[in-house]
Length: 233
Image (tube, rainbow, N blue to C red; front, side):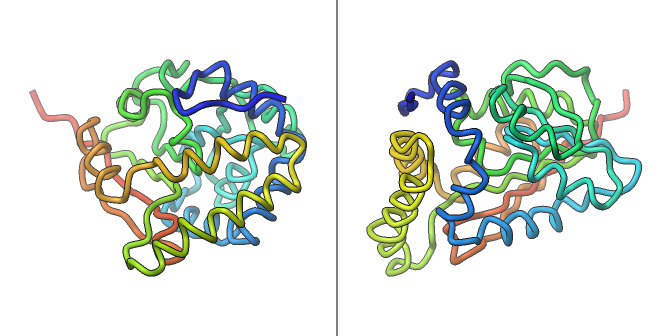
C-alpha cells in the first residue's frame, strides 16, 4: 500500500487516498474521536450555503462534507483528484467530478463559494491552488477552509503535538486499510503553517477580508475570505 511524502507528489497523494478510500470516513471519525462531525457542522455554519447558490467542495473525498453543505438547498459539487474517494462516495447522491486543484475544469466566476475541509495541506502548491480557486469563484464570493492548525496556548500546544496527535495517528493506523498512510498525515499536520501564516497566504492569493475561527483550542481552524468585487472601468 502506498503513502505519500512531504514533497506531495500529486500521483503519490492520489494513490495513497485511493488506497484508504474504502474505510476513510470511518477511520477519520475514530482518529478524531468523533470531533470531525462537530468540525463539519461548524464549517457548514460559516459557509452558510443558501438555496440558489453554487458551491465547490474541493478535496471533498467521499463527499461527506458536500452532502452536509447541500442540506440548506445550495447546489454543491464534490471535486477530488482521487477516483477511489469519489467512487466510495457515489451513494451520497451529490454531483461529483475528478479535478486537480491547480487546474480546475471550470470557467471563471462559476461558483458563489468554494470550500476545503482537511485537504488543502495535501496540495503540492498551496498558493497556486488558492489563486486558481479565486479564478472560479465570482467577485464577492466566499472561501471557507477548515484545516488542522496550531493551538495558541503553550501547554495545550505541547500536549497536542506530543500526545494527542500521536494518539490520533495510532488510532488511524489501527482502523485504516493503509496504516502507513497515517504516518504521512501526522507529518503533514506537524509541518502545516499556523493560523496567521495561512491567513497571509490566502490574502496574497487574491482574497480579501481574511479571518479565522479556532476550534478545539486551535487544533483546528476555519479560515474565511472573500473574493474582491471587480472594479468599475
